[in-house]
Amino acid sequence: MSARSKSAAERREPSFLAVDFFCGAGGTTRGLIDAGGYVLAGVDKDTRCRETYVENNSNEKLDFTAPRFLHRDIFPRSEDYSAGEQSELMAELDALIMQYKQEVPTAPLLFAICAPCQPFTKLSRKELSAARKAGREKDSNLLSEATKFVEHFKPEMVLSENVQGIKDPRYGGVWQEFREALESLGYVTGTKVVCTSDFGVPQYRKRSILIAVRKALVRPEFLSTDGRDELHVPVADPDNVVKTVRSAIGHLPPLGAGSIHPTIPNHKTRTLSELNLKRLAAARPGVSNIYLEDTPHGDLSLACHRKVNKKLHVRCFTDVYTRMSPDRPSPTITTKCHSISNGRFGHFDVDQLRGISLREAAMLQSFPPDYIFYPIDKIEPVARMIGNAVPPRLAEYFSRYLHSAIGAADA
Image 1 (tube, rainbow, N blue to C red):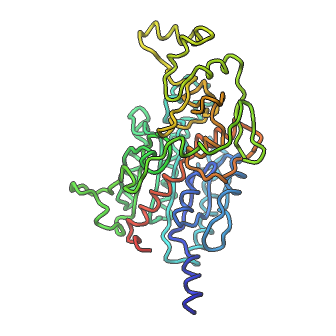
Image 2 (image 1 turned 60 degrees about the vertical axis):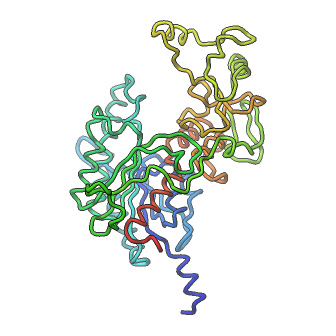
Image 3 (image 1 turned 45 degrees about the vertical axis):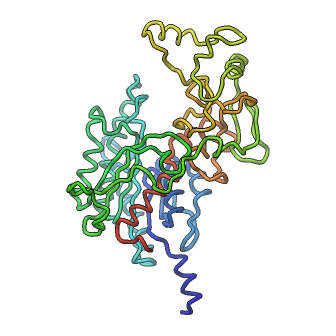
């Protein structure tokens, strides 16, 4: 093989192979690909994210195809749960992993296991119907079920991300149990709460990170320096430059409320009532909603908020009906990021009376500008995909870090 053809072949070989469990719209997968990995498959039981996942995530190594979207439920089938497809999924992954391990036998395998966060959030503690409560309780066992795949395939690396509160004892210790299960399988692990703004994401978003490497492979310099046998977890990218809302979305064309840009996909905003237009017209960037009490149209604060504030003798719900600060990272992008009544989601430009667009929300999550969410004519389902996603830049950083931790720093 000539030097020229060998160089081309080397460029096609991925740094690692990966499977993205609970892939959703593909935030983790996008980060894995950007880190030089080849994603074999994304696993999710929600088919609504299939088109978005497949259309945006063609691999950039080997055969340049998109990951397989495996529509599977990872629980085992039982008399009490007939929807389980664990054995089918295990068989599909067996075939895929074997195929690509034969093609690139030296590439390590990474499992990204970022289970849905709803069972571990404050909102999940609201009163739920019996069916939804049962579903949430089952979802809280997703990490333990995913551990069975780690035990079977023994990937060299594991990456998991979830909400900051997952360590809370009220959730039954699922995070610690997951960590201990990995350690019992021969992995060295580490976990920390980090903020995404410290990793190149233009957003304040606190997340729990858990990383694991097979103990026999980890480089000593990646272990904790305090004598504990655990992986060091960075709390910031040393090369990070904090990105602001203005730097992330300030270049996008202006829009009105309830408008859609003719050529920029997902640059679409929610409509606003006349009352909310008046509220937003009085709002200033980065300021609390105390302004609502004294607008040109009188007191526009919500009666229910006034009642709670009076009862508790403290101002509550201070972020609703407010604008983002242009010179700081955004607040956490949630599934309700399109609604100014659900957080500080008003556009910072006072000449634009609107909440942020779906495109802007995606860019604040660090998705690339050409990442298209489907269906492009809808708001609610797209906002849900964006808000639930792992920020791609966060996944990219930690997958690179894991790859370096197994002795591949110069690869």
